[in-house]
Length: 125
Image (cartoon, rainbow, N blue to C red; front, side):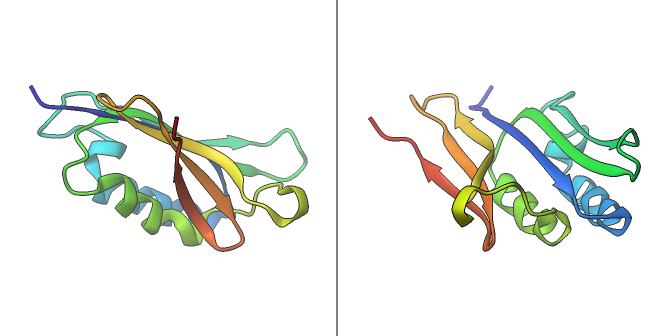
């Protein structure tokens, strides 16, 4: 059956042009954005548009389990990085926007977004 990685991410997309970048990444990495050979329904990755603020805000929400054989999560993060907006950061520090957790690992790897882009930090005992 194989081992799975849980991937959760919530980020704001900068603008309407960023939606095309994110949509292309979801197509290029089908284990995150849609059906795959490995898992008939890997989960959800979708774009949400909030129009209640006076100007549209665009968000990407990902919650899926996938076989991360080809570093799909890293490829996906690299592909969408130019399209994601800056998050609220306290004193210039990166904010946590998601995590991955391999099913045999005891702790997750946290995903942060800051001025330098995405970074990942493994939680240790």
